[in-house]
Image 1 (cartoon, rainbow, N blue to C red):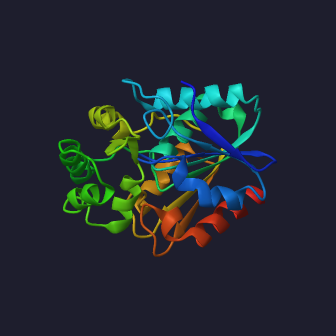
Image 2 (cartoon, rainbow, N blue to C red):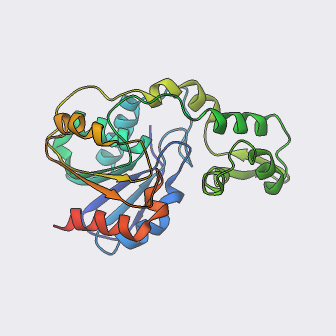
Image 3 (cartoon, rainbow, N blue to C red):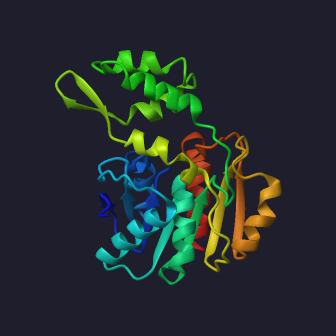
Length: 253
């Protein structure tokens, strides 16, 4: 699938992949900073943002989408950065096409399977879908009981756009993402990857625990870890300076 993308800056390519329910828009501020050093390529993964929708959705497909983009752009060696679901995409891609990667950064995502934990978000989205979405303020009011955390709610609200006058719609394919949640939460296959990789985790997040590190190192033996204090799963949004400094220190050394 052809991925919608934007290119900012010049230099060695740095491709950034967003997480579940996200889009390339979530990374614009970081991309501007990174573009002082790299050619930054912001990507919308399938069923997200401005990229086409598909009934098929798993990490093999997401990795092949990424490979198609890299091939179409004529890139030989790239740096990859993926957050959450995007982190599993780049890890799976690295298993399939390690020769095309210089360095890789995985943001708050492990190799393991995760238990379902998006139920309340999906309930809120389903409740919203059952109403006439004709105002952003009314839509947020409906989401509020299901997603009380303001940052997460605003993150979801960025997916709403005016499909026509007086009618809001989602840019993400909620129906397929909900159906394919088991594929989204599953572990990546066991396979050793020798790509130099940085795992960045939020100290307040449980996506990568201390106990997970040895398992990650078994599959990614050339890996290092940075824990950012006072940050949860959206570590790049909650502590942007510390996050960007960690990324640049890794990529530029």
